[in-house]
Image (cartoon, rainbow, N blue to C red; front, side, top):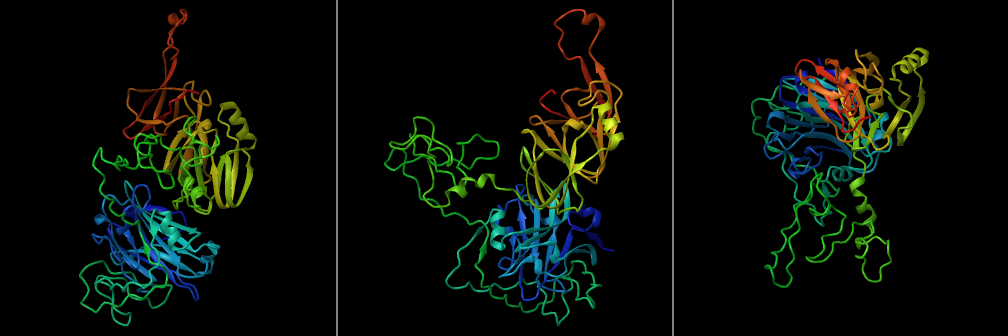
Length: 541
């Protein structure tokens, strides 16, 4: 029996089916509208770094055929074959999307779905309607993503552009429209014939007799019988292309000869010092050898490096084109991922309230901006809760965020870390909590000892299914719990709830009589079975 998913639901593929050869069908329709349904194969940075893994009507399969476009069949507007154990290690996410081909809005679509069929049985169905969207022209329907193991997430997030805007969002490029359309490509050899004939043995499920009872797909098996391949329809829209392969640069002049310039270094990776790689898109190119490099656009050049006649403080290095401002801010654009919680950077977190349905509890005053229709309300703890919070030092001043939109949260530049709980529990000091899903259960937990951060004998325990956002001063370190694991009580941030915490005091009566002791008087010793952990920040409260 198929599991019915709602927007934001996630599950391991192995919990849904033991198979890895899957059929993915998408049904979406609206009167007078046509749709392009595609699959983006993204890398660990959720970018389309290899254009061969953009699967759409002009490129129906990946190089090793782990992702294949099957076409419309069995009541599905579009269908795919996904073989998870053949996907290369460079691909970490498959994002299935639907975009409008022409005018229209996603609010006009009727009831639709994305379904997964394995071994002849439909195992997952995520249903959606146009009432969930407004003026968007594209929607990210669902993701297969690699997090230790392959998982599936029902996304259902609208996107304000068409296929070209969605492609740019994933790091691709849109080719210019050609004067003459390219010759149509033949469909893949395994594609089913017209629906008037029986589908091939391995292929999609047969057309259902009634919409409410679709027949499941048979397992992928023998190849289809030879049949003439149907011609691909012509598209009037501009040809969509993934990141273009740059032309080979001309050979550089020999060293010491006129016109020689040192080759530009490779593009910097995350964490590199600026200036040690090719500048990102929109940044000025490196200066010729022996000359000072221009300052990044939007920042004044260092004193003494302004060109003659230029007023001090004027940004240098602006591109000649009119898109300089957009290019300068490209590095800081919003990061959409189709997930409920999305880090925008180390110190800013975005939560999409339209995913998951439940509200979010956040520390009062932590909202820095929001989009959409969002309601903010006071979350009271009640008389007993306030009394317990005051007595234990674990009181949290919270607000409730609800509605349809995105809320951006931050507090005093602290580093933010989302921790996803799936039925397990974690202990966190109330002082280190920024926000969490309202579906989580939380309570004050007593620890036998003193010196616990945020309160002498107590900490907060969160349990259930959802996400809690913890904040730290600087980048924390996560250590496994062993019989010899100790931590300063003022530096520990969180630990697994199954760990046993024991106070270890370094104070001795005789030592207290003498000045000049180390100052490390109270530590916490952690014990527990393998798999338990503690989180420590490089800072003492």
